[in-house]
Image 1 (spheres, rainbow, N blue to C red):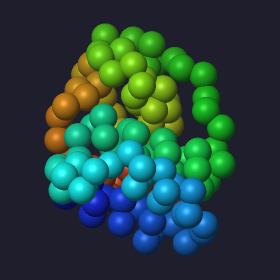
Image 2: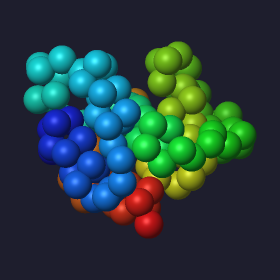
Image 3: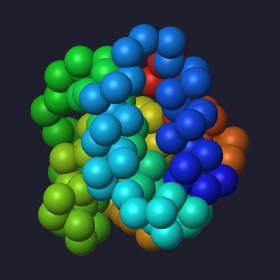
Length: 118
């Protein structure tokens, strides 16, 4: 699934106001980036933006995420990764490794959206 398809699916599944989320996504992603497959890092950023911009979900304290040795491989992504881990939206590859650059399967992405929206 491309980044664009994932963003579209997420906005279609959530029937509330997504204007702030949509603006955030368009500002953060070039046309080229929208055509790329969704990595775990990108999925975390997108899901966290939806939590913050449309669902008004507050961040939780880190617990499991503190054990991830790659959590700071992307400093701007660290909190987004932590939030999806703590909420069980995306599973780490190993107990101590998130796997930032690993492409996600469509089923994993759809499952993460279902967990978030339900």
